[in-house]
Amino acid sequence: MQVNKVRADFGELCVTTTNELSIESEITPASARALRENPSVCASGKWDAIAGTFATGVIKAAPLSLLRNWFKPEVMLAGVIDGQMIFKAPKSAPATLDANIQTRDGKLIYQFQGGKVETYPLRQATANASLKNNIFNASLIMDWDKYGTINADGKYTLTDKKIQAKASTALPNLAPLEGLLPMLNNVVGSANGNVNVAGTLDKPEVTGRFELTGGSANLPKLGLELKNVSFLITSPSVNSAHVEGKITSGDGTLVTQGNFTNIGSPDWHWQANVFGANIRIIQQSQLTANISPNLKVNASSKAIELTGSTEIPWARANVKNLPESATRVSSDVVIVKNNSALEAVAKKSIPSATRQGKVGNRLLITRRATSIT
Image (cartoon, rainbow, N blue to C red; front, side, top):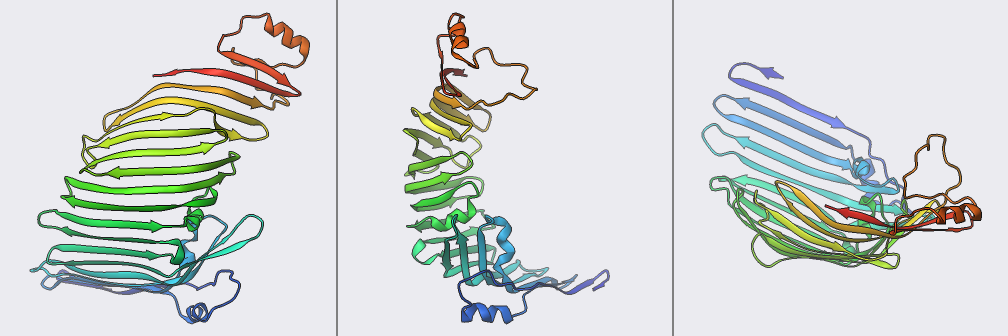
């Protein structure tokens, strides 16, 4: 490194790592070739009081496994990342940028519960960016073979802050997304959408459509199986959107319907209704419960208002032993130890909205919740 008042040369800095191959059924010729490469990330830069700034960066065969922390523990990643960047900022001319990054021989390998292993090939994943004549261009392509594609490109003019961008999604099979969703298993469904953005950075104009259909998934921590999942966002006019969604859990279906206005503005507003009956929210050996919400949401940049009510039409708690710390119990909860205690309880004043019964060692409680305002 050489630095003085009129010039600075930072030289080249490189970081290297090992390229480990994820567990696969067999080592392909492409993956074997990647193992023989020396992974590295290098950067260099110069500054001159007259010539300006010059910087470069190169990524060579960096293993995709470096990204494993973003995925579930059951996920293995194979393949490498290559890329380069050149940035110039002359003192007497606009700055320029040319950058690209892409994967090579990419695969996502997922081990399901029970030992089954599925491989999702990433045929192409590239991102490009350029800056020339004060116009910034960017593009993204992700091709998951039969599982679908994601494409996006955009242009931003630095002088007048104008935006022109579009994105499209065509995912007939959402299975690869399971690796990114730590709480979900057995993800099924399809998604399609397109978004167009125009206007300026201060006042963007957004239109488009996104739809998720045929969705289902399991939430192991809550013991739930979500079925008939659908979600639709339509934005036929600028900066407004209508949202509809449904999720079935147990014997009930949660429904949401709402409208978004002034998207991208400080005066944005969201209004929605959320309702349903006998929706299973937890199903564990210790606790099982259903809810029936009827809520209205009004939200803006200034406040979020939630009104309505939620009922708990049915719940079951398997109470074995109370800890010593449980010295206070809510007045509307009754622990029944035997039939004589149940008869004694029945003689006392009980809120009309509360019902309880006893099946074996299980306590059944049905209670209507108070209104939310």
